[in-house]
Amino acid sequence: MQVERAQKAASQDATASALLPLSIRGLTVTYGEKPAVFSVDLDIQPARMTAIVGPNGAGKSTLLKAALGILTPLSGQTLCFGAPVKSSLNRIAYVPQRASIDWDFPARVIDVVLMGLYRELGLLRRIRDGHRQRAMHCLSRVGMEQFADRQIGQLSGGQQQRVFLARALAQDAALYLLDEPFAGVDAATEKAIISVLRDLRAEGRSIVAVHHDLATVQSYFDDVVLINTRKIASGPVAQTFTPKLVQETYGGRLPTMIES
Ligand code: ADP
Ligand code: MG
Image (cartoon, rainbow, N blue to C red; front, side, top):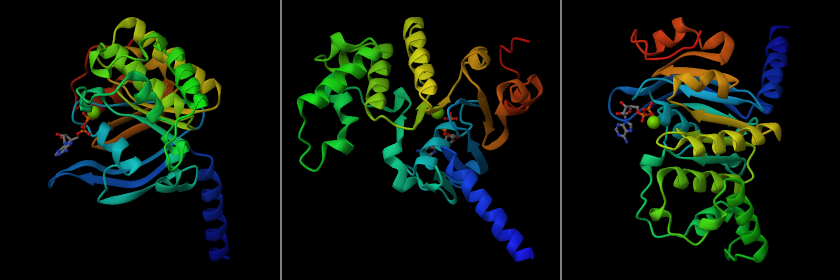
């Protein structure tokens, strides 16, 4: 009986996790001795915008990279729609933190967006007119089509961020992971990005963004994950983004902000 019940529970778990864009269990990551991410369990809900919030050095970027397998965790597993992340990378688009990219890299804007299509370009990497048209369409969604032939290094921070979002759009993913997409961008770019992310959500795609601006968590996001090496809390913004939990996340120092 007990075995049957356990089997039934396990299969229900498997069915449930098959619906989740991301399901993380027991994730621990260390660079040296001290863990940067410790024993995190996290379920990301489909067709929602989820913010990952926590102080500098809290392990937010590390969590994304380890979940994607860019970093090897000390322990833990991540499933993407019930399958190991390694076999699901074609369903995930990742936009790294802008500061971590080498902007002297010589590439035109259109080429950066075409890189988003590389999985379907095939072994010969042959770019056809259809690919170019799709890349241009993605650039127009972020208001950057007139910059297609510019060198990426010659753009402003906000423009670079729009191009990286266009590359993510080209990937046509089910899950978008963005690391501080609004950091260092102008107000017009922030508006453009949030509007594209809302469109993606309306199409049933899931968005997870590391977010540093506590003042906009409530207006931008559906769910929030509070993290400071450990997960402090996660859930719908209304229940989770409370002064008490935010204060706990920031180690007692309540940063400027929550609108009550
Ligand atoms: P966040 O994105 O929340 O600011 P990170 O995930 O970048 O935090 O970093 C978490 C912790 O791990 C920090 O203490 C940081 O200094 C450390 N760390 C991040 N990357 C490395 C690395 N490549 N080598 C060593 N330590 C690192
Ligand atoms: Mg970071």
